[in-house]
Amino acid sequence: METPQQQKEPTLNSRWQALLAEQPKLRIRNAANELGVSELELLLCRSEGVQPLKPEFGELLKAMDPVGDVMILTRNDQAVHEITATFNKFTVAGKGAMGLAVGDIDLRVFFNSWTHGYLVTENTGKITRESLQFFNAHGMALHKIYKTEATNSAAWDALVGEYLNPFAEAPVLTNAPAPARRTDPGEVDVNALQEDWSKLKDVHHFHAMLKRNKVDRQTAVELVGSKWVTRLKRSTDDVLSPLDQILEQAKASQCAIMVFVGNPGIVQIFAGTVGNIKRMGPWINVLDKGFNLHANTDGISDWFVVRRPSTDGTITSLEGYNAKGEIVVTLFGDRKPGNPEPEHWQREVAALEKRLCV
Image 1: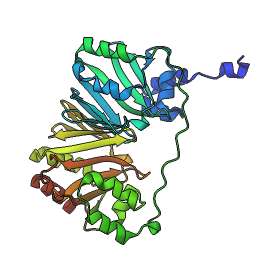
Image 2 (image 1 turned 30 degrees about the horizontal axis):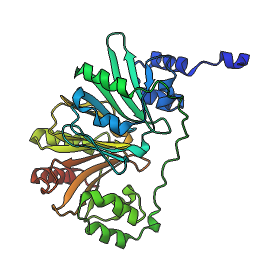
Image 3 (image 1 turned 30 degrees about the vertical axis):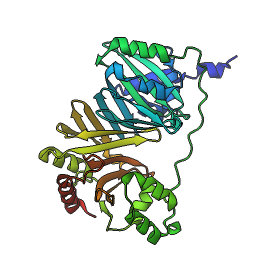
Image 4 (image 1 turned 180 degrees about the vertical axis):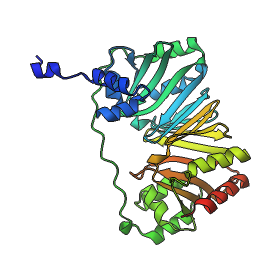
């Protein structure tokens, strides 16, 4: 039985509603941070509209094709990446640990981080939105799939009906681990790192190279030297962020780019040109049909142009990291494996380096 003191304490839901009254546009992830809980804990405090899914996430995504257009959303603390398109032959490999979508929906999925899934129905008063939302063991949202006006409703309902799990027990969430420790630069054999870096044959071998050298990604980027990496100025009162500048350059020249945003459970990718770019306070936004990007550049503390060798020639990226040393957003020139990097992208990056090199 609750004590009189416990009865007086506001519930999590009431605290959330009070917060929304003060900040009506506050997103659930940010509300959870302010309330000191995980996003899933906050979602589950609702009395209705949240139904558990079977933990068969790879099979669910493989069954998405007939549903037609959906809006998929992947985010981390500083960036939100949204694509509206149709799934096409999602595949699962690595004994179910890895998932892959290639096409208008382009994903790299790491299912070992996917623990909980829910059908979420939200009634805003004007419209009712349905989404499939997936979380890790700590309650962090990894990926969301929203039904749109163009979605095949019958196929959506059939898929939801197949994967709902009415017998699921309430989830037991574990505490999120402390941020990964950055590698002490003094512990890194820089000569070995430089040699290993110079021998890369494929950008997909990069993470294995970091592991061999026992170094985190940002520390490797900081140590490998100017042959491969250029540090850029971050945004100030007088200088736009590197992301603002490369997006505006790509818009002006119609240079096709690839934009990667991820978290521990997934990487989501856009490929194409950008057009409608708007700065709103700390956020730089791409608001195009089929692709939206929202990046809080105030939270991106370090920017680098990074070059890696490959059998297709040098591959160049623009990379932004947060204060924890986590990769936030990565941009490449649009290309297919087996093809060299477009000279158009190389010119845009060279112009960016000339303007913002530290």
